Image (cartoon, rainbow, N blue to C red; front, side, top):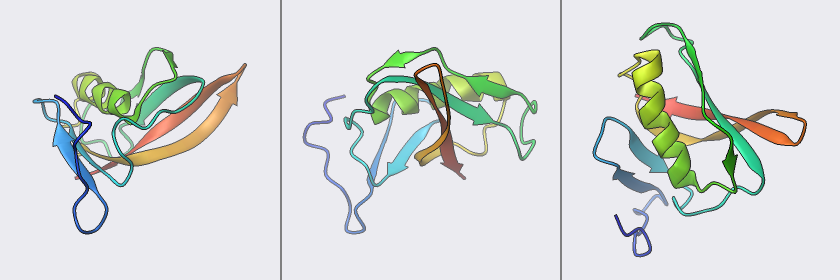
Amino acid sequence: MDLTNLEPDDAGYYYYSLGGLARYSCNTHPQTVIKGKVVFVVSDEFHFGTGRTYESRVHFNPAYEDALQALEESIRITGDEHHVFFEGLEHLKTVRGTFYYRLILGS
């Protein structure tokens, strides 16, 4: 999907999907880059799935679009098909130069 012409709605949010369950509903353009080595984390804290925590592979200078792809993969790992709206990122920790970000999800 060509995202270069994707426009936000009146509230400043961008919406799109990759064709699976995951949905992008974030106020940051999907092609915005996060600099550095990044791991995306999803924990099934509400137990809508298996209760497992998902950690992506290490991404180098990923875009927010990569976070949506990680969410799609995490749905298969955690089994949480309820929280499928990617709404942003929260920095959790930095370990040996790798940034860990929790995917902020909604339903």
